[in-house]
Length: 195
Image (spheres, rainbow, N blue to C red):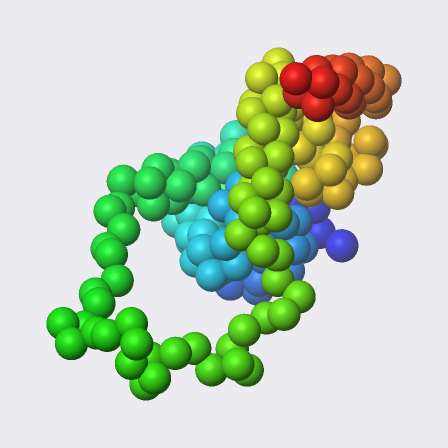
């Protein structure tokens, strides 16, 4: 099996087969990485294509010194964060209510088959949403190095060894950072629960 370095060298020579091999090798992990950031399947597909367009058009930017996978992660992360910034800047358009709308009008009631009986009620949905927001705030307050390890292990479902390889640090350091992150989150969450 050719190494990443060999495949990139061949891509620089415009070898489409080498490009397809790299795509097959990394599309799964890069998709999961993107989904962990943007949380939108449709956006992930577009961003994945953009990541690999960059590989095809800018392969010379990879120096070959670090892991190729780390370079892909950087590209994917940058594109995902740019996507999120763009989404935030877009203004949401309110739904137009027809001018002749009448609340009593039978024609506009929601059919029973469209109502999910298992869905949370408004209070439960609000409470769950608030708890998730609180948890994300606690995660955001973690030191960046601990937060990144936590994200790779829990969101990207990477093994300790893979995280160590990805970040270029010893496995023991990954375990230590993960332990710190979990312990601090548990303590901080308990503080939230007690208030």
